[in-house]
Image (cartoon, rainbow, N blue to C red):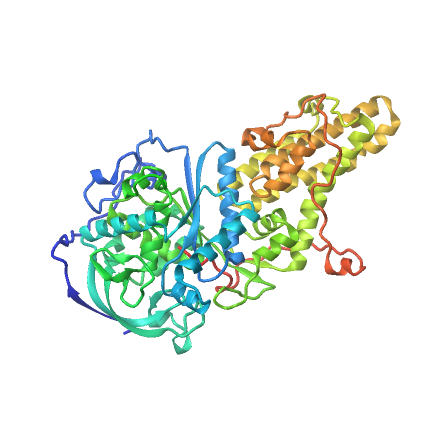
Length: 606
């Protein structure tokens, strides 16, 4: 056997465990999509361990959208895998704000554990100094990538430690923590004991490809097995809890092997939060870090407590994570919450990994894609757009520089940028940069408006269903339709003919610029700076752009007499290496990559 557990002590104040009952027996008329919604009821008004799954239809937080990235592990600086998670979360947050939701976007860093202490020692610093430096590097990268987070939690924050200790005590009082000896194979990089049957040759971890070490410890355990039936019922009756569907299947298949209680303390690790009833041990990094999603909701000026944090926005609407940490979020975390009598998050979405030139990469493997280099070379809009447009959200995706440059040039520089620039150029030359009619009047009897409106509505549906690549595609189709329209109408020729043809050409320009205005709103979750530059070119102020909502994608925003800014390119075309050396320009159509490799650049964190 891979591990041997021997019970050695039961606490005198431990509650007797209750018999498992069927978790759910709702009638068919119940709306199962609201089982995990927020409620105004506090956890203190319910018996310990009785999690609340239904909510009143008059829930006061119905307009609240709380989403989280993983809390990124600070054993090393951020890589593209962690940046990808955060870019995706930011696009979702920005879209939710556009449709009127009150958004709380949480990110942060996971700073305890053996790996952190080891990394600090290797760098000749203390764990505190190491965590300060790496956590700051995440904040700096998020600023460069235009990440609009609302809360940044560090698991070394005092308010977080206080909430972890309170949560631990609630789970303990519910009878779900006991003490036992544990002996097994331990992956230091995963900070997790492994079952022999999941290991590769020579007891290597399948994620990090390094041998696990044999350890025996006297630890505290969480009674995960007690929640097997409840978790099975959750997954069966609420399939939206884990997305995409194939991630749900992964979790259900894993659970079929039977849930095992897991160790939630470490006797050999000093860098961590002390176990409240046994200061000789520290709380296991995952039992600690997952609580960051709740402690982040606590305001700095208030005395930290579970109740005040919960009342500020829990449960989360969406946990956005890498697929490598799916088990912790879809199994361990909901069981922990049920034990403490707290609501479950509404959705856990596990996205895929990134590869580079078709090869796996990862922080622990020493083969990473450096996000700072990418953003400094190409700018945040190019980086954000490429990964959200070209990686089908949920699947694995591949990066190659050639593909990156070709896609960004074709879509941002040509389809959008060139269309806007040449239209403004024609408007300046022939109409003194002034619109001759309202966009609603200019579109009368013309099919182009209908085409744009249908694509906008389709993009909204895609955003709402987290199909970010498809949402980008729909918005870009508006640009394609604009290019086809202006090429077919050839307003440059109509202007030369004068008379009615001149008037018709001037209205054609209004149509294209109205489409560009709509693109600026609809694509702003993905490329906020690019879209701000479009708005400026259309004569709007920065304040008007930041005040825009999704309702501004409705046709009819531009009015006759509005003066546009002088044409100025909004996105500079990126030169390929061959072009920089004087060779010909080459652009290729790049197809999407489907999920292939089980091991690539992941998003290790809480």
